[in-house]
Image (cartoon, rainbow, N blue to C red; front, side, top):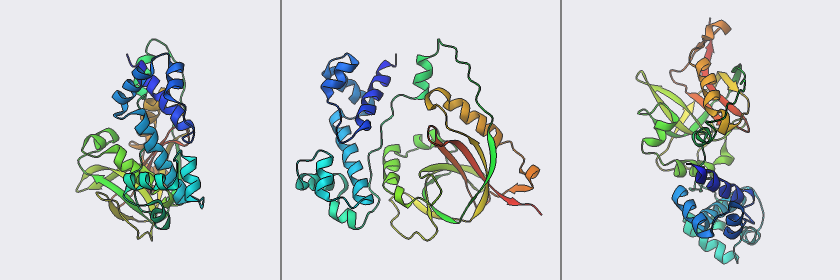
Length: 301
């Protein structure tokens, strides 16, 4: 039923493996065993764009990061990502971001980068594997302390949402928000992982947030529709599960961690929750970091 979700995800993976030399649609179709026409039709149906447009958007976004993070000549970046000339690259870059490559390199600002498409999820995997019995013992959540210095948090706070799915269903464009924050990844607070979600508390209600932590002295641009908040320094109790297979174990891992995180008594460690003006964080990077819920605490007594 969901075989095309998996096949289109393979096409996306082939593009992402090397954005400077992506395999052709003909080669992809040969490996999948369907006609180029049918492959591109299914790709469009599941991603909302053509394979050509997707590849172009991902290439121009990766080129933007190289402009931001390296001293490589603009001409060399243009050629690397398949543009016929620096002029062609500049026109494409301006069309995408309303700024020239030269101006962006001189003064990087938040821009809406296209993010990697994901059309094959744990839900689709479980449907495909539902006939197979898989007995895997996942470890219990680890509990540790982490100090996070005072910082700013740039993002969206939504008091009408209290979880990841509800947040994106509540009028926030995942691609636009995530892509814009990706363009700010070089500003991530030292020691943190970049884009993160979490929870905040307002008038006795629990809301959901999504954004990026930056240094306390940050005074640069704030993307439209987002806000910048000061977050005091704090110790956090971290409820953590190490890296895992996203497709196979995501639901179980999140349940294991959150069951402990929301029912733990910090008094057993001499701490009390400190969430009145601080916020909880949720880190979700399955294969590279794992999954964690962080809740701020203060020493008792």
